[in-house]
Image (cartoon, rainbow, N blue to C red; front, side, top):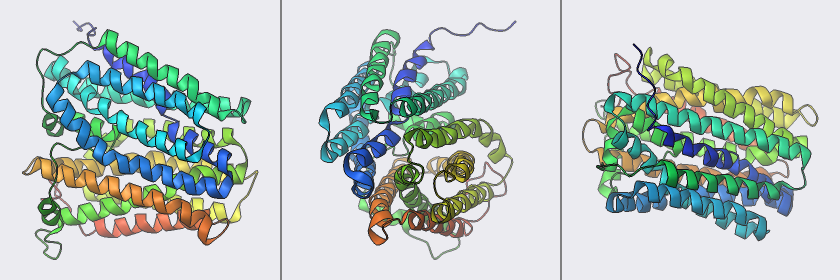
Length: 436
């Protein structure tokens, strides 16, 4: 006889409204900066905004991690995060300047970390161990569907009210406030609490946490930890881990370069905010579906091979978008990117993310988990920040219409990551630690 579905896990749905609200936030901010400052300055400010967002993620992860371990108030921290996000989203409407927009975007990055880790810990503290995997999968799906729903509304709004994009921040803030209320009503404080390091010991919790934001510390890494991580690059026996970190840096620099300039480039070449939202909506939808099958695909192949496959597909798609930006213009530009972008951000990202984070997971199961994860998180945050910072300047400073150069450069970084990953010894099975 089938067991009835548990009712105590319904608190997971409290994440849906805030996921709905923040899913399209990056696109909204980048478009709003272009709307406020024009194409050239808007692109540069967009790069600064993305750099600030990624840069703040490092101290934010450290601050809220320490707060979580000391306070042990899961419901309060989650509700606080959602409430502050609601206030910050609504405040976009009243700022009306590039500096204020960038500052608010950075503050949202900071407060979002107050909820990411507690949500994962709550699953492990309130659910039986046999239900952990299903609960983490449900949390990921609810968040993904919320993100996609947010892009659907953004697409419709941009089509109906293209000159009133700033108004969309207000209802999105209200949705985040709904999540805060639901968290207070639906979440119960657990009878016992776990430390953050427990998230790194279970693959479902580890993957769900890093998908929320790839910056996650369980300990503050020291300079010697960084030296140890990159030591041994010249030896065949010890080079796996430093090669992995190097490929991670190249990947996130590439992502920062491409993603920061993609939105303003789309708007320039299509002159339609609705089409910008629509293309990224397609990418989000494909990514949500791709993650449903990526785990099974990766588990039947070597991690090195699947990482290279994901990187190669992403690199070729970036190159294709660069070629489209060079040779195709409105009204035809939307058609090639509607194919290339979902393949890059959906299929390729899902395969690479699953492979790379499985490698990372095997690493932190051996020794020095806090240091290894801390170094990984730091290089992710710094690399994404540097890529985003450079993106805006490269796109409009070297050439007046140099987006294609940014996209091609992003592809070069991805292909460089392929070269690095290909030097990592291939394990004999997908579950074997590729980085040992």
